[in-house]
Length: 358
Image (cartoon, rainbow, N blue to C red):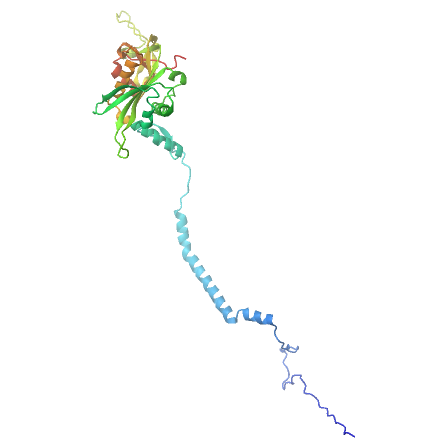
């Protein structure tokens, strides 16, 4: 019989912490310390990605250093920013200063700063000073438009030579467009209303063409430097002499043999600034000049006199007119126009209303 195995039993060592030799103090916690356990993979990764205490200290030191620099920068830039703000000026409207400008060369008033007005002024001022272009396109249509060449090689006072042409106002094409631009330029330059279609039907256009030299173009070109518009009229009024204007309404003294002076109210004022008056009695007159224009650069060269003479000789076919006999009249001339009619007409030119035929 097999011997029986003897079992021996022994007590395992207690896992409880050993009892300290000294009694626990009151500050110690009564709960046992937590047991250590194995960390999971997620916990390990979070621990690895979390900043270390040294990096936290470095970040805190960098942020504190940045705050100190910002504070110092704000302290140093404070007075400079206030100085910059003090240099600013406030914009405001000045109602005392007008934006309207009047050109001394072309006498046109325009709004400064308005692109449309300034562009219009530049183009108009160039035409008033130097005239309008007459190129090859207008010359090609001259034959179709029945342009009549009155004279060539007309010599001016400065020695230059030009030519004079004549045509009807109902012309079309390039010449018609050029005539429209010419009439607009004349109306602005003379501060006069545009001619009505009814008046234009009774008119003929006389132009003086002067050749120009250009460095950019090899072909000869011309410019319209003068224009006279002649109109068919029936009556006009004689211009009062200086003696008639100087007359007063005062009656002669009793017993005086001096004749009674004509009262001033019987005269019609045309332009008081130039002392221009006319007698109200209508007189038969066949031709009138509603518009006369010469570019400012080419004035005092005899262009106006040449055009007026050509119009007087050719306006009525086979019947030349004499201005000294009162056969030609002007419509409300300006100061420069009055000087022309006095020099060319020699006191015989009359004044008329351009809308009398309507």
